[in-house]
Image (cartoon, rainbow, N blue to C red; front, side):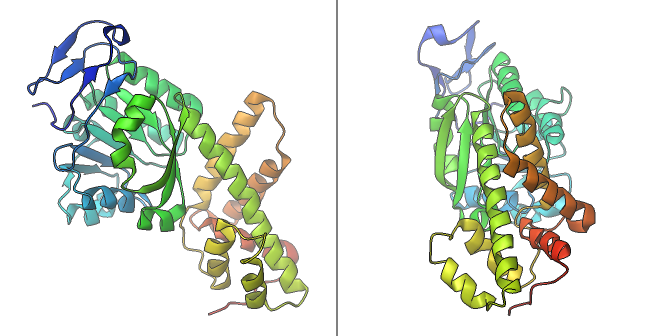
Length: 344
């Protein structure tokens, strides 16, 4: 049975290649190639949603969609225990990305690495595109390679399906509060159609252009965060070595020109010695590595990015892979032979 929730039709016959067919509700479906010029109605309670990846952020983002009434809702995670909060809210578990996609109109993926994205979406026997019906949409929220986003979009289009790259930023706090920033690449028509879904967990949602552009925007964001985190840690280290009261120092700089999301969100965790991940160090190292590879491809020099990547690689090599990005302070403590005092 075709998944309900879409009302798909062409804007012009010239946007399609090959024949079209009609589903049971009369909606026009693409039979060979999709160019992205479509209209789509996303309706709470009728649009079937699939979610793959229920980690630190994904579980909260999926929950927001369910709280807004979207569903029936299907979920897949390699460690299914992590999906239990969604199951308790009524989500149905599936045994593979393909099985999940067979039930769904829109599938979200939020996994760890580019090779995970490739396997989950493109695998010919078990991937999302192997199960997704023509006219369906896959939205990858993972920070990944722009070239892979383009490849996924091309493969989806050749099958009469649609793909958006939509990486997010805002960490666990943004995911919990539904205030993430979302960088979207791909068809603007598809973007506009699924905006009600993205708005469930995103506060600032921007479309940047063709497939892969969302990934480029997210990589620029990660470059900015990396330098900010260095600044936060170096400022704290300098203030401590200079004998300043760190609580007073943070209260002052948080109200001035040095204030930033990184300072506001992570300096309190640093001072409490709370290194629990809002975003894993190992995933941040992955992001910075992708950014460096893109810099090499574009032949641009970003020495601050290179330094940040090396500092985080050092942290990961010393047991920090599963810690949050604020654990960068431990690298500076090691370099300077000291440890900041813990604040309650």
